[in-house]
Length: 483
Ligand code: 6PG
Image (cartoon, rainbow, N blue to C red; front, top):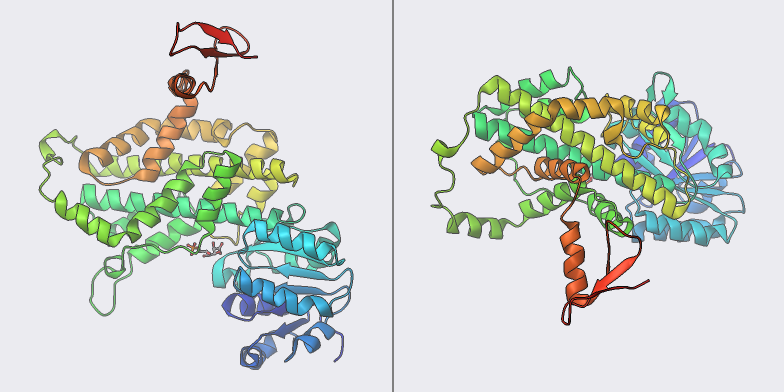
C-alpha cells in the first residue's frame, strides 16, 4: 500500500466519519478504516469527492498507508472497545507513532493508556472533541493532551479542522497525558449544569406563569440576544417552538421525562469529590437526571402526597409576568456563573493534582466556538483570566461580580417562588446556597468541628489561638492542646 495519508481515522460511526470528512475537506489526505468494512466503503463512495481518502480494508493496510511518524485517530466507544482497538494497532506501530483517542474516555483510563504505551515509545493522546455530529463535520472544539512531539505532528490537522473564533482555532494542546480528556470531562459536567439550569427556567416560566412552550421559546430567543447568548439557549428556543407532527402537541410534551446520561457528568462529580471541589451545580444537575429516572418512586410519592395542602395560593407571593421572566433570566445568569466558577475550580485542582499546568484562559478560549457549551460568556471568562491569571474564583472577577450583584435579589426571589410553589429548582437553589456559603463571615462548620471532637476526639482549631485542641467532653470538660 502506498504511504501517502497525513493521518488515519479508525472507527467510522457518525463522529469518526464526520471527523474524517472534516479532515479531508481541509486538504489533508486521510486514511480511513472500520472494523465492518462497509462503513468505510460507503464513506468513500458517498463523500470521496470531498477530499483525498485512502480506504483501507485491513488494519495492516490502514497503518501502512500513513506517513511516519504515524498519527492515528481512534473514534470508538469508550472503555473496552477502545482498549481492543489499541491492542490491535500497537503491534503494527513504530516508536514515535501517535495514537489519538478522540472518544469520551475517562481521564483515568487515558492516564493508564498513556503510561503503558509510553513504555513502548508510542505517544498516546487523549483528545476531547466537542460539538456533536455537526461540530465534528464543520468545526468542533478540540482539547488535546499528550506529548509536545504528538501535538507538533497533530497541530496542522487539528487546528485546521477546529471551529475558529476571531481567527483563533478552538483547539489547543492543554497539557500532558490526560489533560485533554479531563478538560473534556469538566466541559461535559458544565454542559449538564447549563442544561439543568435551562430546564429549571423553562419549568418555572411554565408552571408559575402558565406560559406555553412556544411563548417560552420566544423568551429564550430574546435572552439569546443578550449576555446569555449561547448555543444551548438558541437550541432551547428551537426545541420549544417545535410541534410534534403526529399529535400536534408541543414536542417537549411528548418526550419522556426521564433523562439519560452516558456518564461524563457522573465522572465529573466523582472526580470533584476526590479533589474536594464543591461542584454543586454539576452535582445537582447529575442527581436531577437520576431523580427523573426513578419513575416508580416518583409515582409512589406523587400518590402519597396528592392531597397535601402545602401549595396554598393565598400564602404565595404574587408574580407579574415581565418581572418574573426577568428574574428568571437574572437567576439563570447568576447560577450559570456559579456553575462555570465551580467547573474552572475543578480544572485548577485537577491540574495541580496531576501536574498539567492548565492555562484556564486558554480553556475558555477554545470553548468559545465549536463545543456544546459555546457562549458569549466564555469571552468574559477568557478576559477574566487574562486580567488576573491567578484568580481565586470567577465569582470575584469584576464582570461576574457585577452581574451577581445586580442579579442577586432576583435570584433569591426565584428560589423563594420555586419553594413556595413546589416547582423544583435544585440547581438554582444550590448555586445560591454556594454563593451565600462562600460569602458568609462564619459558617456552622464550627459546630460540626465541635461535634466531631465530642464524639470522636477529632480535635478542632480555635479562632483566638494557634494549634489544635480537644475538650474532655465525657470528663471534666477541660481543654488540652493536641499539638
Ligand atoms: C459534546 C457532548 C458529547 C455528548 C455527550 C452527551 O461535547 O459534544 O458533550 O460528548 O453529547 O456525551 O452526554 P450524556 O449522554 O452523558 O448526556
